[in-house]
Image (cartoon, rainbow, N blue to C red; front, side, top):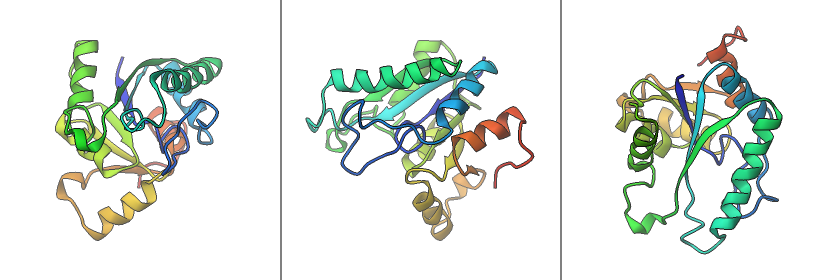
Length: 189
């Protein structure tokens, strides 16, 4: 089974500059839950890799984060899919840890947990730090236009990064899933 690494905020659910702090605030983007379920049913292992600095900042606690993730898991399961694992960085940017994207710590942990290499796997995100994280492990970077994705795309167009020249761009997670599963004639841009 191929692993697909997904960022959370801005890819699966709506993001907020004020942080998503509770299960009530955690709201999936249109089509994201169904896309995850379809990918899971097709045999892909979905693994979430997310920075959650709100923990370090005291904006929410571990119980709140676990409630958000329980809601996400339940929605995907109700749609007929499964999330294989969720990895998160609880640190603030000032902590200079190895697990906060774009550092590779979360991907290192995923590789250790699944006893595999992520080289060649898709990593779907909406920010440059997601795409740069993908490059650290030889993952295939995918940018979605949801969340911060439009701004990220503008940034890439204004300041091209040769390392990210082959990044596939999709409107959202649903369009990526359609492309990967061959259920849509439209593909990446």
